[in-house]
Amino acid sequence: MAVFIKAADLGSFAAAAEAMGMSPQMVAKHVVFLEDRLGTTLLHRTTRRQSLTDVGRAYYERCKHLLLDVEAAESIAQDMRSQPRGVLRVNAPVTFGTFSLAPFVTRYLDRYPDMRIDLTLNDRFVDPLEEGYEVMVRIGEVEDAGLVARPLAPYRLITCASPDYLARRGIPQTPSDLEQHECLAYAYGGTSLPCRWVFTRGGKSEEVRANGRIRSNDWKALLYAALAGYGITLGPKSVLDSELAAGRLVRVLADYEGPARPMHVLYPTGRHPTVKVKSFVDAVVAEFGGLEPEHCTKTGL
Image 1 (tube, rainbow, N blue to C red):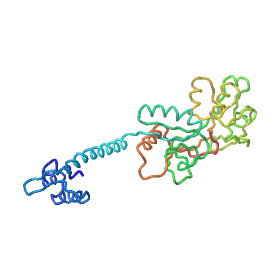
Image 2: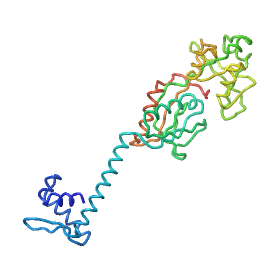
Image 3: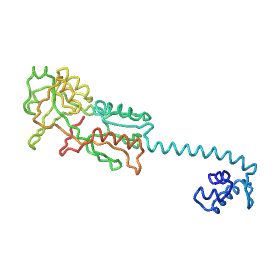
Image 4: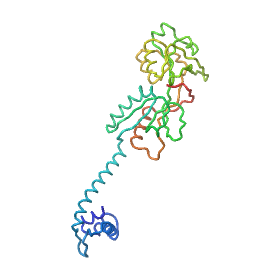
């Protein structure tokens, strides 16, 4: 159709051939193909001039509209390859998603107004292909070979308590001292199994049993309890830093390294990730990127 339009516009096969970078014979073959397909003559051709038939004129007008639509569709596709747009389904752990990823998402959307984020937060294993997630953030080792994993900064946990609690109960000096304190334990999946916290100093690890009157599978509840003076919480440093700076909580056992786990942003394996996936993943890495920790535990939030 494009060759036919060009031949009609320029008035000859030779002119159309020069404009489209092909031979006059190839232009003629394109036009003859259309005429054979339609079963009618589109162009009257003589050695001196050519002109559209009545059918050719009507076909010419319709083809121009069709080709403009094709050009517009290709322009949209090219634009979508260069600028992220559309809906992106993202899955992340509850605590990280609530306190860290959600604020990041709002800033990302400010930057890309044609994007929409469908953010689902849970701590269970999800199958991205089965459940339709395009990007996931996961804490812990990556075992699925069907996912591309880009490392983020390790998810580090520290222990804190309110000044009021520490004034009443004293400040623990070693991890074993925690057994005499109210520990606000994170119960993954609502499990009733004992919660154990692991600390490291000088290359040696020490594990203690975290006992207390409050435990929850949602760390936000434990944070609120710690702020209210009900015990010592083990939580993500990235979140607790702001509480420490405000003086609402005080760090304890600062001489010990708390648990740290690797964290990754993942997306399904594919030769060419879409622009929206690549854009979001690159932005997550820029915001939360870093090296994996040398030592990891199974403690998680």
